[in-house]
Image 1 (cartoon, rainbow, N blue to C red):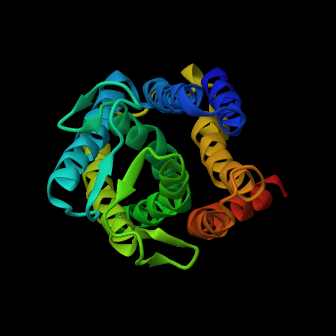
Image 2: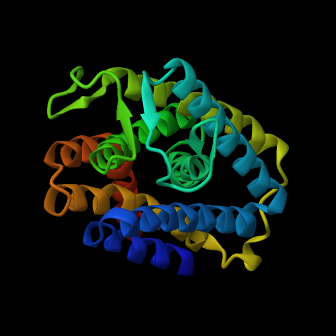
Length: 254
């Protein structure tokens, strides 16, 4: 939980900074969230599972971003700002694939809590990832981290981000989730409970990351970043998973 706490602290610092300092905070948040996700995956499923998750999600994320910036498929025509987020490969900052890993892991775990059926878990993961992007893209576009060629065909209040972006996110997340479902069967069995604390406590890290991303982002967008539209869109999008998760937690406590 230390990495989760550090992630939260770093994200709280985001609206308090600007320019180069904000770029550094952005990179730190990505590294911490990815580190928290991979540390939890290693502790509960083993190193091989964690490495497989990283390769699948970051690898597909990088491939999608490279193709996307070069061709406009599947997200639409866009470009990253130069020299803002560190080293880049084919115009894609290398920190971006790690952002996919840090963001997808808690969504994948929460989707697995809500459904044990592979097909519904895959669908829920894609929906949750799309909900996360309703926070992520508006925030990063407002900060100038990337820009779109088409800035007048998005959601009401977010016209600067085209609809194609969200459709592309859903499609890429669907592919990731489908391959992760296969990897779940090919990876080692979970680490014995006594090594991870046992019980539902083993899920505390990804659940905390999910809830913070969902509720914390909604608060930050509405109150501190001047992005009220994305606050509501993201709250609703991730809420497809978040509301049932809270209901399930409340029933478990009773």
